[in-house]
Image (cartoon, rainbow, N blue to C red; front, side, top):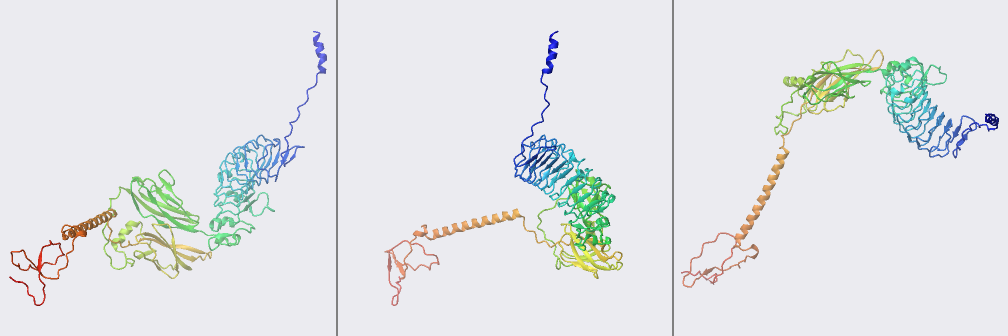
Length: 626
């Protein structure tokens, strides 16, 4: 028990424990300036010639400025554990790559400047972890793609998003529509060609929207624009106004932009690029009544089709109008058709049935619609058994015709009824193709006296074999026109429009006079040539015959020469000496023999040499007789 008081006496003599010392700050990177005397800490390295993020950064820093260097990539470890960083500037470097999760530890970061670099895309993982980010500056890069989930972690806190001066043709509009706190949205100087309707409807705090210098031909009305006053300049604007900049775009000034023209603005950059009548005019100087649209007109549709079951079928429909009509298809059962496992609808108005079934037959309806109205056309499809086989190589000739094939001939009743059955609905009564040949057709239409102020007529036509629409401008006093540039054996769709001056508005307008469908006569076909394999076999046989005949003739000539020279080769035949006297042959006891008959004119032959007694033949000598 005596030990306890002793221990109590010794306790005051024990040294007191020292308080924890603050961590030793990391040394300041070379060529950088560090403010470490007071919080928050700052590391300033602008224009220091750095090739990468310095590894010896103080991880307690709240501000890091690395602008105007030569940093090419941001790695995962470069900014690790910098949980207190509030401001990061990487502007005007040569950054091409940002590793996924490179900013994952920067959960307190408020501003990120990546402008003036060489980024080409932004994926979902590159901005992961920035849950408190308010300012994101990505201007002056080479961005061509922005992932739909790239802004997910900062969508609720982002206030300033700058994507200007990039190469963006498309944007994740649905993702941008979730930025409920954004105040400034910079999309200028990109390659955007369209903006979907309602893209900004949920951006209730948006104060400035810049879409200058893109490829926009129209700007759809948005609920946000109707709620807030639209201005052009931020100076002097009320807090509730929206500054909308859209100059430098090729605006198509038609009825779709009437809503924008009705705004009270004082801009000086906007101008109309089209239609031709308004091209180059100051947007705000064009009267509201001049922003007009033209209803669609169907200029081409497929003739009635018959395909066997199980085969594909393509239905085509073309229409013109201002703005360009959108074409949709309705099935014979009344259902709107689109892309599915059995059908594909293309933007150019073509509907392709990949595999036809017997129940697919019927009347398909093509609907062309735009802001000014709609037009419909019917296309008949028959699904049945395959047609009977036909000879692919025929050598028959077309029956001769009298006259030029291009001469215009009125169609007979039988041919007219056949063509009416082949080409679908009857011709519009307002326009008639009365005479047509292989490459020419005469178009007639009634006088349009009820339409005052007609300036001219316009003929539009194209064939079933192509999609090129041909235009012809006809004087106002005409009621017929001869087309001479047609192709033979094709079906044409033709429409006549009256171009007149609208007395109500004083603008130029068009009104359809009527449409017609006709087919040109097929060109005369020459007699079919023999089939290629047959012609090739004939040539081979003829060539072989010539070779065999040449060999036989050569052999015959050799035999004849061999026979003439008495069995000796022609090179060794002896040539007899010429005889200038008449000789008689004697055989001793026998008397002279009569002279032999005159030999036939044959080539010289070899003779056996015998003894001849010859006497000269001449004047004063008589032949020796018996």
